[in-house]
Structure formats: C-alpha cells, structure tokens
Image 1 (cartoon, helix red, strand yellow):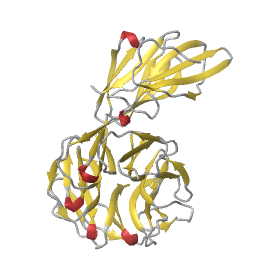
Image 2 (cartoon, rainbow, N blue to C red):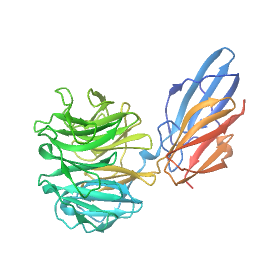
Image 3 (cartoon, rainbow, N blue to C red):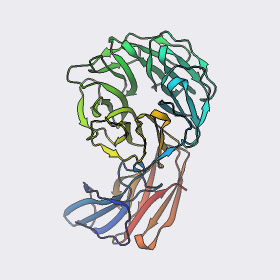
Image 4 (cartoon, rainbow, N blue to C red):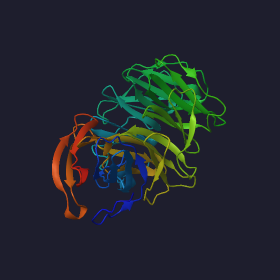
Length: 425
C-alpha cells in the first residue's frame, strides 16, 4: 500500500522495504520513525512507515520513503598542512591524526586542528587509543605514546621493521607490520614480539566474537587473515580464494569485515571462512574501516584519484557516499567520536560527517511503538512529535544517552497519524 503524507517532503530519498509485525487488534496506524541504520540530515532523521492490518490478516509494515542522512553530508575541514595523513583515532574527547614526516594534528571537535610535536620525522602510519593512552607507529618500527595526543614519549620497540598500523582490541594494543611483524602490549609501554606464522605485510587488527583478527597482504597481493584466542598464539587462516589483498578490518554486527585491494568487502563470523560482498561499484581502494553507531564506514580513493566513502549496517549491503571535495587526495583512515565520523587522507585532507545518530524501530507492542536511540553517551537529544508534516513539530522528550543504546517508547493512537524525529539541540 502507498500512503500519501501531507506536507512538502524535501530532499527525499526513495526507499522501499518491508518489516513484518505481529498484530493483536485491528486499526490503521501511520507512524514516522527514523530509518534503520540511517543517520539524520543536519541532525535529524525521518522514515515514513505505514502499518495496515485487519482481523485475521497482516499486510505488514511498509517503509515508503526516507530523507537523506548525515553520512551523505561531509564537510572538508582546514588543517593548514599539505602532508599526507595516514591515521586518525579518538580518545579523551579529541581526535588525533598522524602522517607523513611525523606530522601530528589534534582537534577537540574534528573541525579545528592544531599541530603537535611528535618528536620524529619518520612517517607515522597508524594510531590507536586505549587504556588511557594514544599509541602511534611508523617507519623503522617507531612507537610513541601520549596521554593527551599533544605530548609524546618514545616507547621501546622490539623491531626496526616498518609498522603499518596499530589497534586497541579487547584490552590489548596490536601493532602490525611488514614481513609478518606482530607486536602486542597491554599499556603501550612494554611491547612483545609475537610469532605470526607469515612473512606477508600485516596492516590491521580487530577483536570480536572471542577472537583477535589480523589482516594483510603479500608481495603478489594475496589476502592474509590471522586469528588468535589470546593475542599470543596466532593461526594463519589464509587460503587462495580469500581475496586480492586486505587493507583494513573491523568487527561489528556479529561479523568481521575486511576490505581487499579492489574495495570488495569480505565477511566472516569466525575468520575461517569468508564471503565476498560488493562494497562499491568503482573498484576503488578502501584503506580505512571502522564500526560505530551500528554502521561500518570504509574510506579510500578511486583508481584515478578522489575520495571514496562506503557504508553498511551489516557488511553485506553497502552504500557509496558522495564526497564533494575538489581534491584528488584519497582518504586513508576513519574514526568515530563525540557523535561524528572523521576521515583523513593525503595532502592534509580531513572530512567530517554530520551528527551521527539514529532511531532504530524495534516493534509495535499493543498501544506503544518501541525504538532504540543509538547515540553518543553523554549527549542530549531532543525528540519531537507531529500529527502532520505541514503543521510542524512539537518537543516531546529530551533524552541524555547514558549508553550507546537508549530505549524510546512512543504511544500509538489507533486511527491517528504520529510522527517522530530526533535532533541534536
């Protein structure tokens, strides 16, 4: 069924889908909620949902339209550097980006950036935050740590081989490098060399489902995947059909997602068997990947220059986002913090998403519609309701998230149109 909603729905994006719903009585209800796994344009989202049912028969819930979302809106920020940026992380209420010739930039909001002294001129290829510490790694096996991203201290490194990346996963820093180099540390200070069982170049790490995962690629570009139950003993899970070469890995929604050299996503719950998924139609590289706010976000660059951002709620269905930046630089890394995604890349490029949050529909239970507000802990959101888009919106509730997921219950009045949206104040 098609529902005609009153009022002008500007900047709409077509979307058709179905969600089954158990029904206990008969009535006609029209609700507007946020789209599952989508984020709000300029801070709010709306999804048009129609529910029709009669005694003894269920038509279901039909999604009939949605506004464009915040990950379609990326803003280029000023960094005042032309150096390539290879990594970005968020911690202690700030973003820290690292890159070429030891460049380090710090920002409290992802928009205004200030340089910091790294104490090195080596290329810095990766950065992570965990255990109250930023850790960055780079050429020659260099490792440096900082509590605030501004003041940096050298850490004793057990290798002189280039380290391509570092991640903090399940209470452990994991540094990955060339020729199978693999280091771990509980605090960023004391590092231990682990036997990886491979000579391929390792580039990224993640943790999920009780398993550590490290990915990489070889000289002829075959993909590499290693797993470990404890971060100490590692097993090579690579096989010939695995991919062209992995560049990034993340865990979320019950699955590992790794990106190969063609920008194709591979998913696996166990790290043993992988399934390929098309993540973008342009055969662009995806160099950076993260999972936050119920969404995988991958960033990279097209074969002939420019930026790529691709997103997925589950690692299976992907949406390529538009980045309107007149710059041939590719994006290299992405991080989430303080309600926003921030991606960094070549030539000092930094782009920032709109505010990332969503209302996820769960179920209709009697006279109530149940939702989850997925947002930044400590951030306040304003919920508004309306009975007609043309009549405007009225404040209904103010919620401060005490965790990533907050329950929301909207009373549903049979026979009445109800509209719900969330905004950042």
